Image 1 (cartoon, rainbow, N blue to C red):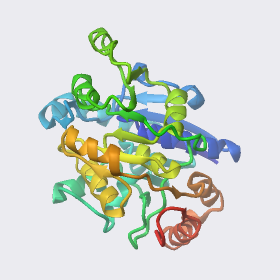
Image 2: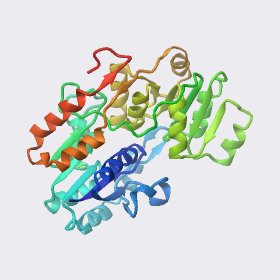
Image 3: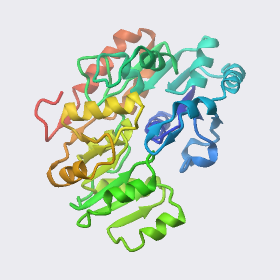
Length: 357
């Protein structure tokens, strides 16, 4: 079996999930090619494990100071190039297409009548889950951005729906927790706003990940409690594992990893992004995190002093999905997906929340 696996690369969450899936594929010695879209190749990091992957412009959104800019996003979109890329992508050598909300391989798979499986958090939104800013436009976007005949949605809880647990076992096991260590990854916020948020809290050590200008580096040189960290997969893994908590935008994958490690979570959803606002709502509803609609020092102070992390131990979902694919259960998708979902949720454990599942 030869597989093409498409990944939406706008943020790092989909790529993180692809790393776990890639390991599971390699463990079973499957032949898999990867395709990434939504981010230029030079802006990706630590991608060696994916070999000679394909990279396309795809579709993405433009942000400014923590908000989606709809008009700028539309202007940046090159729909003519997207159509050409979909039309020109030859899938004849592949037996199966997998899309993690990646539109080029998904639409090419549909056009060329290839069996296509969708794996990702966005596909959970086709079910009855906590949603914010829900609308017909949002539902249509989730349904048709990267379509597939078989869809496996992922979420922190099943909400009595046909949903799988998150693919969350991509970090090392938790190291000894340093109580005042906080990891910050607010990739859609301005560095200046982030520094203003955390600067007053000098009893904590903040490890802030991102790309920083010389002026930001110079302005924080005297702030010994703020550590500026370049984007690094291994460095981030180690800091998260030993931290007490994480402050981030409300992407799905990082929160999944933090929950799996028992770290407390404070999220600032990207303004104008329905998925992130819904994630923030779900985290609070499940008691797994707090949210703030703006970079709010009052909420941060409360979270630092009063909130405790909750640990949910999820099974190896990536390995289970690969075994499910190999076993040929995709032939009767709904029935077999129900069995896969039930078996995985039966393995979920929590040491901090009774009767979580």
